[in-house]
Length: 296
Ligand SMILES: N[C@@H](CCC(=O)N[C@@H](CS)C(=O)NCC(=O)O)C(=O)O
Image 1: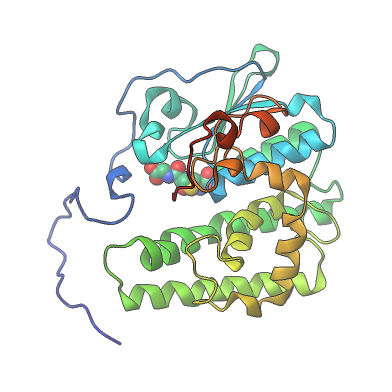
Image 2: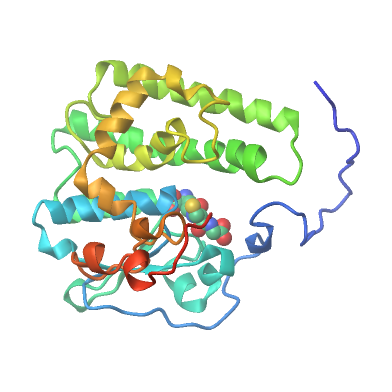
């Protein structure tokens, strides 16, 4: 293995603003707002401020699944937070998520103001609020929550570890790519073995565990994140592929992946969502007929 021995950490770390990595411009070692901005408020009780990254998509899938069941209380306004331009550091966004990361939800039902941040917490909040997509049987509920929290703890190795060093870092460091490829393949094997004996993550019921895992690991096996399907030989995880395709066929999932999407094919981008009809009338190809496909 090639060794990079050029860097010796100084006694005290200093913030090197231009470190060259993709998204380096949005990384800071401090929290808190950098600009004053009030968030827009739409007509529905649920206000989502997000972007269609895997963490954002978890929540739009859940909301679309709830609406598909006819639960009108799950109607929502979705506003796009452009993390590349620093929208997550506005005072309004920081008020609903002090961690400055999408997704963040404000529930204004009955005049109250309940903020919820962290995608896993939002999924759990909505599941409990509407009594859906979290099994009521205690054993199955525990299994669903175990996989939900597994996802929250595991995905940073996929995104911040593997994805960062394989796709975004300004230099390819063999040690880092090896370390995180090994871990991600181990995680895929965990999922694949579980799905050999279970239709869904929590057994025979579709749940928030599937909604949390699919946007990350389903996208990975299909090559939709980091373009790494061949590198990681994801076709070998046959049970993952079965489950990924099954979840991807759900109409609510097909709608959920479009909400707050600001890249890709214009017909797949519904940057703001306020009404079910927006999927037919307000995708980017309809609003802006000259729009071209773009990358994230
Ligand atoms: N654990 C958080 C992670 C959220 C997260 O990392 N969001 C990213 C996009 S996927 C973000 O907002 N990044 C902006 C930034 O880091 O400034 C969750 O699941 O909600």
